[in-house]
Image (cartoon, rainbow, N blue to C red; front, top):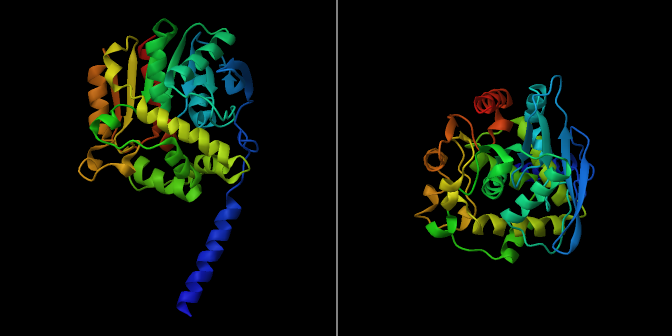
Length: 333
């Protein structure tokens, strides 16, 4: 009887989990953002594309500064919700785009994804909005992108803020094997809420999980549960290859704008870590080392560490992160 009870219990649990996971469209149709979503239409690589973005006006007296929030690979503009609230209340105009290939933006089947291209797209969006200079804040993959943006457009970058950026180590150079886009695609096709939760628990949050994390994990999983799963997975695979093959660590010394790094020390994120040889796997994604090394390499950089937080301090402890962020921004104004 006992094995039968266990099987029935497991089947019920699986069915309940499936019912809890909503299915969203390929452009995240069905998931509501906390602010109105606008779109920027433009031509890139011989095709018409749309870049979704949030443009949130300051609450109360404007301070004259604009902040651009760049999301990570497993995140969207909406994930910055608590930071948008804090920044707008402090008088900042906040622009938070979804990059091409992600979330509510276009999902092109053929696109040469590069950090340079995404930076150029973001720069064009800001110019279209009449924003000549901005504070650029990037998290995870968005941190890689923010660094590339600051390298390409230093004159248009007032400050650079990096939140647990990836790309602070050259995975290929240290021995992480190359993986084809087709292989990345097969891996992405297996994405669901359970795989996201397990990955984030193991890599982002040192084995812990909070109910607040589930909202964003279900947001991501919903695109893989919906009718656009194949296209979403393909674009994700293309960006996996971009991240692996375009580290920014070798150019940190060239960053010339005021920079602050926020590092949750529990983070262990490293692209392709699952394929890494056993002898180097434990050395990858060592953020206590990576953060301090990056802060030393970027001229004049300030390092802020959160000893008990992981990959997404802005999600894990919004009040503490936002207070530290506002303090850092005011220090350079």
